[in-house]
Length: 151
Image (cartoon, rainbow, N blue to C red; front, top):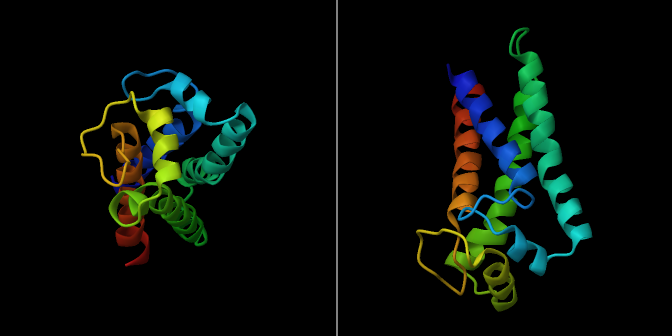
């Protein structure tokens, strides 16, 4: 059962990472706003870099479901989702909670200002609901991995 929870969390994250800047899903995203704030080249590179290792982890998890996990797979997944979560903390939560970054806040407002959010603005940053869900799924993935495969 927990393997399917992990698979669902990974699948959700890969879909969001691959599509959230490209497929309009208002009010969860604002593709036009995102394209104002970032060049097409940077969007392609950002999508590729942020989704490459999670997509690899999802494919490896899927291929190992029937035959059993190789011993190195949980380490790969922990490293992948640990780095992803560290990036999410650095890009969103540290400026939101601890250290104002006015330039980043202005960029996020342009890119995500028209999206749905339920958290209040702090330090000029408003974490939208889709990013909140992505970050929560990343944390849940790490917790699932730690409890099931490390502890």
